[in-house]
Figure: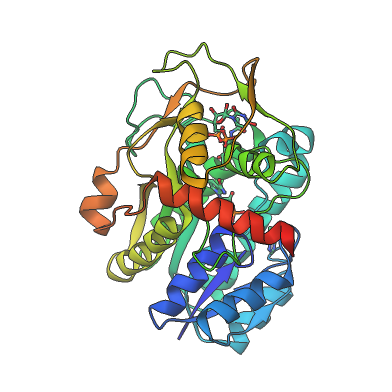
Length: 334
Ligand code: NAD
Ligand code: UD1
C-alpha cells in the first residue's frame, strides 16, 4: 500500500516525502515539474536512501492519473499539486482556476473509481481573508481576496461536498500559515523562480548578494514595531503535521479542517533581526509602502490540531532562519 504525493517535487511535498519515508511509508510521487525539478526527486532519494516511483505527469490528465492508480496500490493521497503565486493568480485567473480546480476534481474522480477514500489537502490561511481577530480558529468566517485564495476556498467546499455524498470518504484540509526553513541536509528547500514574493526567500537572496536590499512593506501597522506579523512555521514541522493528518484520516471519515502554524506571530523586523543574529549576516532594508492586500496580523490558534492530531511545531525561529540560509547558500554555490 502506498501514499500518493501530488506535487511531491515541490517545497512542502518534498519535505513531506522525506518524513513519510522516515516513518517507513511507501510513497509514489506525481509532479509535472512546472515549479520544481528532477534534482529534488534525486535529493529525496539521496536523503532517505529509498527508491520510489516518480511520474512526470500532469494531475489534470485523467488518463495518466488513472495509470498511476492502476500501477500502484494507492491507499491515501496527499494533494500538494497546485499553483500558488498570489500576484500571478490576479493576472492570470483562468490558469489558476483551471490548474488548481481541474487537478483536484480529476484526482477525486480517479480516487473514487479506484476505491481510495483518504485525502489530505494543502489549503492555506489565506482562506480566512482579513480576520477580525487573532489568533485564528478553524471556525472563523472564510473569504478570498484573490483568485489563488478562491481556488483554495472552492476546493475546500468541493471536498466537503464529496464527504457528504460519500460517507466512506475522509478529508483533512490543512490550512498552512507561513512555511519557511529547509531540511537539515540543505539539499531540499525553497528556491523560487525570479524575484521572490515571500519574505524569507527574499531575505536569503539579499543575504546571498543576489538582491541589494529588502523592501519592508509598511511600518505603520498596529503591531509591536509597525511591521506585519505572521505565523512562520518550519517546513519540517509542517511535513510532520501531514503524517498526523493521515493517521487521523485513517481512523475517521468526513471532512475536517486544521490550522498548521506555531501559534506565535513574528513581525518582519523580528525575522530580519533573528536572521542576522543566527547567521551573522547583515540584511540591508528600507521601509516602503504597504503591499496592497496585506493584512496587519495573522497567526493561528492551534488548539484543535494539538488536541485532535496530537501535533505541535517543535522547531523555533533560529532553526527556521539557519536552515533557510544553509539551503540557499548551497543552492547558489552549486
Ligand atoms: P510548490 O510550487 O513548491 O509545489 C507545488 C508542486 O506542484 C510543484 O512541484 C509543481 O510543479 C506541482 N504542480 C503544480 N500543478 C501541477 C499539476 N497540474 N500536476 C502536477 N504537478 C503540479 O509549492 P509549495 O510551497 O510546496 O505548496 C504546496 C501546496 O501548498 C500548494 O497547493 C500551495 O498552494 C499550498 N500552500 C503553500 C503555502 C506556502 O507558503 N508555500 C502556503 C499555503 C498553502
Ligand atoms: C503570502 C500570500 C498568501 C499566501 C502566502 C504563502 C499575499 C498578499 N499573500 O502571504 O496568500 O498563502 O504568501 O505563499 O501575497 N514582506 C515584506 N517584504 C517582502 C515580502 C514580504 O515586507 O519583500 C512582508 C509582508 O508584507 C508580510 C510578511 O512580510 O507582512 C510576510 O509576507 P509573505 O512571506 O509574502 O507572506 P504572506 O503575505 O503572509
